Length: 285
Image 1 (cartoon, one colour):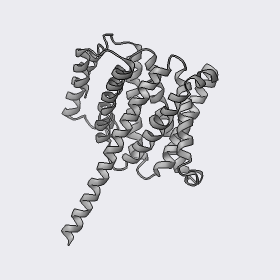
Image 2 (cartoon, rainbow, N blue to C red):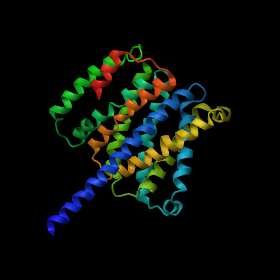
Image 3 (cartoon, rainbow, N blue to C red):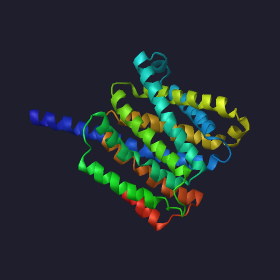
Image 4 (cartoon, helix red, strand yellow):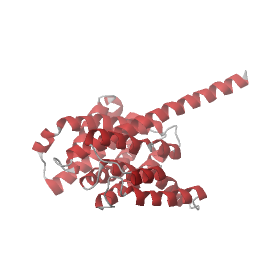
């Protein structure tokens, strides 16, 4: 009887992990779709405008799922959500603006570097030396970064550097979400993250750009897709998944993002792909 009970508990844990992994794969697809759509929009509308619109749409979509829960949120949810939103704003901003200077497929691979930064940052926080695996992986990935600079026949540029900064901030976000999100409600925490992101983007628009309503009208359809499929759902999915999945497994599964981006960019943006770049991407993965 006890063995059956243990087996049942193990099955429940495994089932929960499988659901979490599926949610992370869907998160990766949402990101990759957003990357391609951002590349389409960035020539018409600024990065801050894109983020402001996406976050506003995402916040409204999440709010209507559970308005009573969100309006009754306690200080812990608000504080964690706003802090996470500020961190992820930096990641998203660099991730969008880099597309002005580099290709979607290259940006996707460079932003995937966060999978190695996560364990490295964890090692620093816990004040322990990184494992041999991390050291070797970082070394191989540095070689991969050099090769991937030519994935579309272009060298390493300013946009690639911004994509790398996106990876740095998303690594910090992943670690912070793993620490602060496990005891929080998924929907409530997701709402305050997207709301904080939207406020940051709005301030950037007002202070540095001025509101461009014409640009928003011209890109309303891709902005709607990015808001729902590329932000609301991925934010909720990852927040929920990280209650079950380990930080390391999150990073590994999200490596599907650059692969999805590569496929979508080749299909819809007609971006050329070179062999050396593919080899470099493979080394990073």
